[in-house]
Amino acid sequence: MLRLLAPRLWAGHLLAVVLVAVACALGVWQLGAWQAHRDAEAADLSARPAVPLTALMGPDDPFPGDRVGQPVEVEGTWVPDGSVLIQGRERDGDAGYWAATPVEIGGVGGAALYVVRGWAATPQDVPPPPTGPAALTAWLQPTEGTNDVDPDRSDDVLPQLRTADLVQHVDQDVYGAFGVAREPVGGMIAAELAQLPEASVSTGLKNFLYGIEWFVFGGFAGFIWWRWTRDELQRGEREEGAVPEEVTSSP
Image (tube, rainbow, N blue to C red; front, side, top):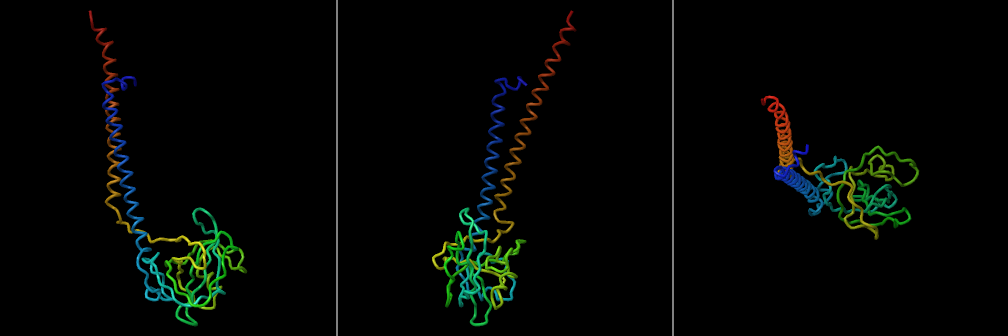
């Protein structure tokens, strides 16, 4: 092994280290650019101009999967008696609650869309629900369907915004969606979006492929260095084995 530390081999070792380091750095950079493209595409929808909720979906329509995070104009009447708290919601790493109140769309007897008014650290920090006409912009979100079970169905605290749970708190139909108020209502803290649209598979694909190519190149450079050092060691072993043979053959 000491043969590999010979000064005449230092340039080869240095070249191998530089090639592998540069290839890995460029691979990480390209993968970072790929992820940045995907994040940018996911955020673009939430920044689009708002459209009327009724133009996007009806109360009996399935959630439009390509509209996650779309800003919608919500107009109707607050239904304060249907207000609920959603537990286990984080903001900046702190656990707390969402306050959600339904908005009756289309006049008396219309279906209701639950709107997350904002975030609070404790139930005591949640202001009373609003009453009267409602006119706001909210980011559209699909209702949730995790396996969390409501431990106490007698209160207004829920583990998730699931349609099957929400219909128990209002006297009208409920949209298969909910909204997160872009501007918090009643002085609450703004709630963070639960879901953003997923970027398409092809988004930033070129950067992803370039990143993989750089890692392959780095691996190839490492393989060439390994073969080179192995050949050097084998050459050294042959040279050392040839010495005794020359000595025994001399007169």
